[in-house]
Length: 294
Ligand SMILES: Nc1nc2c(ncn2[C@@H]2O[C@H](COP(=O)(O)OP(=O)(O)OP(=O)(O)O)[C@@H](O)[C@H]2O)c(=O)[nH]1
Ligand SMILES: [Mg+2]
View 1 (cartoon, helix red, strand yellow):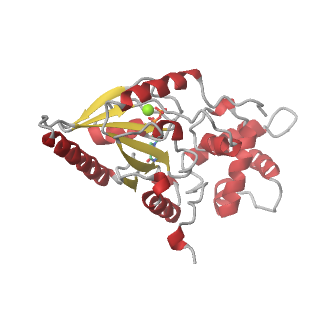
View 2 (cartoon, rainbow, N blue to C red):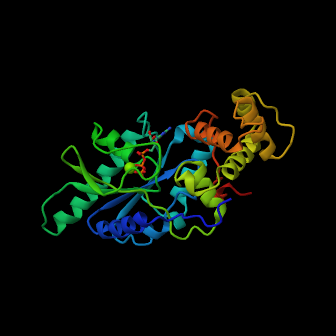
């Protein structure tokens, strides 16, 4: 497998600097995290720069995560001081689920900003929010959902948005679309793998077979039903590497001489997972809260 993984490409260093500069202009950061990996998709390097700005955490792609796990994560994010934020909510940026709640929360911030401005004798103005998050977390899709129309470019690969762009929502909200940011210090490789499995890291920089095997491990931990249904393979307790070969065989991923093309099989499994065809899955469990412990 690739030895050195370039988690933090050059354009991202530039995007992080731009985000830092633009932070001064906003009242609110809407931090998008992938509901399947709420820990790995957080970005501490940006958040430690927050001063006056409010923060809302939106877990996106809730349609791809396990609802009971999303519920636990939202409770954790709202209740722990470590993650202090105004609110946490779940969003499906494609169907629009969670949209009204988010708009309500943004307006609440607008009201408190304008209340402070009034006390200082300043004019009322629209609320400015930066939409930030790891690549492919749904920032541009969410902005299009809120603003209407396809004003922000979206796509299934990470790194679609390259520059910052202000987009108006009615006359009282301004949203800043930003390029996806990864945390420069991903020292935990497993976190990086999970980001890549969920499509936030360019798959070309990580070994596909390794990622697909990790994904199969996670899927098998939950249940093997999805694999059985989708690929017609039975789980006999073998290593995921062998299971991947069996999937490849079933899907006709063969090289000359009849050998299974595992690279191709891995590409299929990863893509189908990202498209939701292997069912819902949450790869990271919410930490136990004190209130839930005995
Ligand atoms: N299933 C599902 N797919 C989503 C959701 N939100 C976004 N997507 C899809 O995820 C992909 C990435 O969406 P984008 O809006 O381009 O993501 P982004 O965060 O702007 O990505 P970058 O600009 O590359 O950082 C697209 O294929 C979207 O259709 C969601 O809530 N559920
Ligand atoms: Mg984008």
